[in-house]
Image: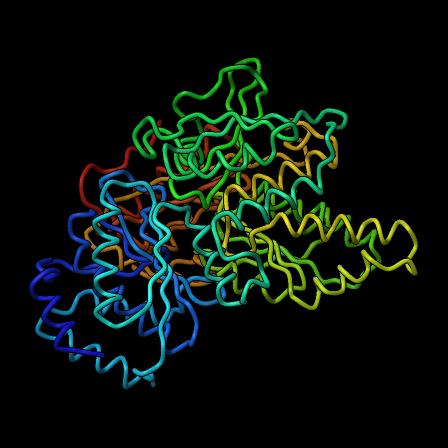
Length: 543
């Protein structure tokens, strides 16, 4: 690499004038867009180094997902479509924060310590969401890639899951699918058509209303509307004419427990909300009394896992199926899947990278965060066995039919870390196969009332946790106080964790009373405020 050229461009076009520190969190860098120019330039360089080290294409996605419009961010995608390796998150954080005078020294150190062959080729695939700041930041990243002599494929405005898909296709020479945006739509759309016949069954109606969060998903879904016409009607609102993620999108619906702006008011309308970069999805509906009903990532996970179990058992194949959740999973969903369905459940730290890696330990691993981010992963050897069983005439017809259904459903899944639109199609395929409407789905089990709050603190790093974020180890006394509060409530549970992107501590609480859970959450929030350096207004506990 020409370090003199890198240094010259850095100082003249992309200087580090940011006085604060920025950290690569669970979903990359996220902050106000106006401080990210030098970060994107440096991440462009880093993707080249990562590509040289891995001898594979690396992804660079410019997005702040469900954050508000003024924010932006960037995350790097590793060769198998997974999140960046943890050790390289630390490298990215260090590189983003060093002063310009130390940039070249830092790059040379990375090359030496990571045993990178500077003469190796490098390939970087870039995408961005619909934020106005995205184009300029993508130019900064491209400057970094060019300065480090990497080759670029810039796909412009695409969903985050599409970028993950493109990385996998590129690094498997098309074995996973055609490495193009058109290939993405064809793969998933055609697989869905194989699963769903033309006529709806029993209670299922092939029509949904989609809240696209005024983001890139509103663009992407138009292609699915064309492919699925006559089989699934998708009526889109918040399609880009309003403000990105403003009172809409999966995160708003999940956290606020209410329908998004412009939502259809007709009772029992099956409705879907995705987030700004289309990697989270939740379902909801309003009943005849205008009461809001949420079917979140836990509901999706249990629906998918239970149907997969049914097909696996009917196929007669020896397949180990498991479900991965986080501490945010509703306790009722965990009990339902482990005690009633008898499917193994494990809990990991928050962040899809943790769930994804754990899910890979199963032959078929289902994972979802409660916020609606998740997917299904299948071992190649397992998929081969399923495919073989679907094609053989030796097996009983019931086994062969189940194997074929299993294969077709897996083809609808985008296995690369989570895809709101793919997950939506999987849900629709299962509801169709079972002949269910949304209320039948909801009746599988009853959620425990839950509440999430945020507490602003001076320094989020004061809060440390263990046991997949379920136990707080710092500051002293906080976990003891949480235990004391939880003990007062029937089926009470609460935990706290530091945000990965901002100086706030997130509080989760649940118990068997919708009134009492508000009080429990507020009491835990107050404990955090008192013991972890809260700033701003003190949380108020309802009387």
